[in-house]
Each structure stands twice: as structure tokens, then as C-alpha cells.
Figure 1 (tube, rainbow, N blue to C red):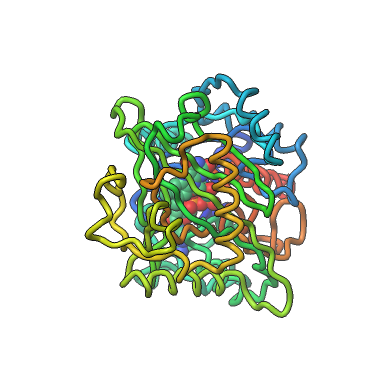
Figure 2: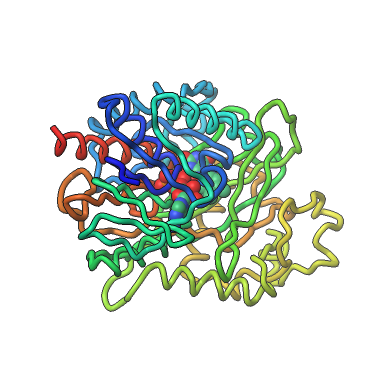
Length: 422
Ligand SMILES: Cc1cc2nc3c(=O)[nH]c(=O)nc-3n(C[C@H](O)[C@H](O)[C@H](O)COP(=O)(O)OP(=O)(O)OC[C@H]3O[C@@H](n4cnc5c(N)ncnc54)[C@H](O)[C@@H]3O)c2cc1C
């Protein structure tokens, strides 16, 4: 089979491309392929949408003006119901007093139980416009760029005129294999490493005023992906290890009285470091090794006392809520590099002065939460092309860091293709 455009990955980046292409040129034959039975990224998990630059974007590739233009298009497709905020100034002033910043972001939240409905409706619209969608179909990295063929399971090949590869963060290694195979130069020298904090709602009440408050602290530490209502910490499964992450159900599912969010530190590595990805894998495997095959969790009370958490005492007395994620009670200090943990702990203290109560002994710190979206391919134009016919976009290619930015990357790549076709 031959298609004008084949899109690998049905996440927001791939969907953004498909919508832009088919709406601008409905005669194009477009195929979306995904190895999962449904898009597996953040559209499915929680689906918080941020509509204020630079959240979700990689700043080096976007200007405010351009991102805002794209966000209007994203909004028109995802139809967000914006959340209101209260008392923002109060929190902003408190943050300023401790040399930190709280930024005001336009946000909406779908919830994990509702996101599948959204994804299905987006795919239905695309199908109705003639886009073909093949799920449970994995692409191999050995792309024949000369003959313009991609290989899938069962020795089947598909022919393309233009190819979009948008495999997301989990497809980070796959993308590196593709780039190595096609001899595309790239670097991956930045990553975000941190913890997921889980606490009682009353110890982080700002979430009733601001669903996903974005705090920035000295030392390149920030809060990220806050979940409340019915909030759960989850394990993200990779080949040899697990990372932690978090999500929440829709408001209809009620409340479990908990909040979780990430505290991430951005790390820029310099030569002679070979690979940020390898460093991330190393850190993740160390933590999982110490945790007996699982991530580690430690109560703030134990951390402050300088002792490891233990399963027998994990839910006693002041440690009065049960962890929502099955991790190993242990010692973060053994697993997280001290520079990272020191800066995160400093920021936790600052956050506790903005929101007194966060450092209650019961608060849980899970480790590792790592974002490996820092592949930086050498693009040949501003449309994220790496060859005349191949485009790499989304979180896996480092052109975005969230749903809306990923969708915007897809639009930009589509515009590049349309420009070439015209
Ligand atoms: C648990 C979790 C919660 C998140 N919550 C949020 C949130 O609330 N808000 C937010 O803005 N961001 C969130 N994110 C981040 C968000 O998922 C990403 O920013 C966004 O989805 C990136 O879009 P993408 O299209 O680049 O990749 P993805 O959405 O990851 O999509 C990539 C797709 O490519 C497919 N794929 C990969 N390799 C292959 C292959 N070889 N062959 C075929 N298909 C392949 C995958 O199955 C996947 O469906 C979350 C991420 C996770 C993991």
C-alpha cells in the first residue's frame, strides 16, 4: 500500500499532523499507525491541557507568538473546558517572597476515565475525513529511506511519500534506533529528574484554587503535573525498570483526599557525557535495583530523621494515609544523586513555606520520576524535517513537553509537508 503521508504514533503530535493535513488538503491519503490499541501517552493519562506558552513547549523551537497561534488551532480541536483560579495573587506573592515564581496557566482537565472518549471521538472524526488508522501495528526502525518504505510486523512494508515519526517519550529509544539507522545526527544532553510527591489534600490546598499550579524554584526545579480529586500515583513501565508518574480521574469519580505532583530538576549535561538517555536509564535502574524491582518511596518524616522508610511502619500513626502506588519503602538518599535531591529538598522547603503543611511527616516522596524527552535531532528546516521526506516530532524528538505542544509540533510538520506539496 502507498500513502501520501504515513504517521507513526497516534499521540497528540501525530493527531495534530493528521488534522492539519486532512483539513487543508482532503485529497491526501493519510495513514496513522500505532503499536498500542489506543494512543498511550498523556491524552490517555489524565489529559491535563495547558494553553499558555511555554508549558508543554520546548522553548528553543518556539516563539510566544507562534505558539499562541498554534494553541488556538489545538483548542479548536480539543474543545477544552477551562478551569477557573482563585486567590492567585496571594500565592504569587508568597512565592515571590521566597525567590520563587508561580505562573498563571490556562488549563483544562479531562481525567483518565474520560480521556478514551475524547481520543475515540478524535479518531472517528479523522476516519470520517478519510484518514486510515491502524492500531496494534508496530513499526521497525529499519526504514528504507531510499525506497520510502517502512517495515511492520509480519514482514509487511508500507510505502510513503512523506513520513512523520511521533513515538512519544516511551519511543525515545526507538527514535534513537531510527536516527542511528538513518544516520541522522542528534544529541540528548538534557533531562528532568525528580520525585513524585503524594500528600493529603489539606497539606496542599492550593489545588482547590489552581488545578495544576506551576511553581518555579531556584536550581531549575519546578512543580509539574499536579493531580487532585481522585488522584493516583502510577508506575510507568519501561523495558528494564519502572518510573513513577501521576494522574487523576474525572470530577465525576469523586475524591480520594489525596494530591500528587512531580518536583523535577532540569539537568543540562556537557561533554564528555555521552548520553542523557543513558544517564536516565542508569539512574532509573539503580533506583529499581535498590527497590528490588520497583521504584522507592519514603515518608518525609523518615527522610527528615535520616532513616529509611520500612514497610512495617509505612502506614502507622502520623503516616496516616496509604500509598496509592505499590513501591518499595526505602531510602531515596541511596538512589538519587545528592545534587538533585538537595535542590529538590530545598524547593520542597520553599514550597512548604508557601503552603505550610506540605512537609507533614506523612507526605510520600516517590523516586524516580524522569522525563526523557531531550532527543535533539539535527533538523534541516523549521518544520522538524530530518530529511526531505522524514519528520520527527513530539516529546520523543524533543519538540514538545506536553499534549498541546505535541499537537502544535504536529501542525508545524504538516505545514512543512503542505508547503512542499504546493
Ligand atoms: C502517565 C502520563 C501522564 C501524563 N499526563 C499529561 C498531562 O496530563 N498533560 C500533558 O500535557 N502531558 C501529559 N503527559 C505527557 C504527554 O503524554 C506527552 O507530552 C504527549 O502525549 C506527547 O505526545 P506525543 O504525540 O509526542 O507522544 P505520545 O502521546 O506518547 O504518543 C506516541 C504514540 O506512538 C506510539 N508508538 C511509539 N513507538 C511506536 C512504534 N515503533 N510503532 C508504532 N507506534 C509507536 C505509542 O504507542 C504512542 O501511542 C503525561 C504522560 C504520561 C506518561
